[in-house]
Length: 68
Image (cartoon, rainbow, N blue to C red; front, top):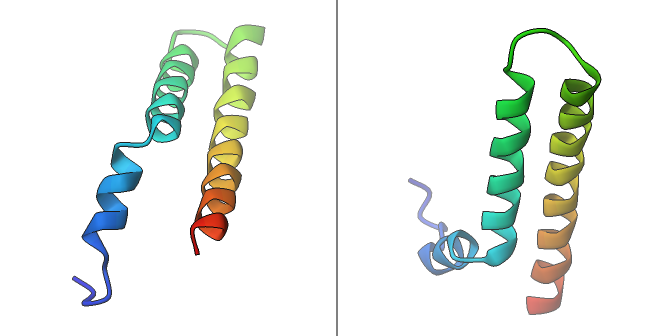
């Protein structure tokens, strides 16, 4: 692994509530998309999953900027 890898930051990210909320929403959205057929619910689920990823990335960027 990279010698500059900071395990403390890694564990902080794993224990963050934002990460677990992101993971839960993403898993539910992906599960909904994998049901048979294509419906409005699946399209909405895809949009929610993508929006969740974007919100998580921006949220972590804001937090990281304030920590430095």
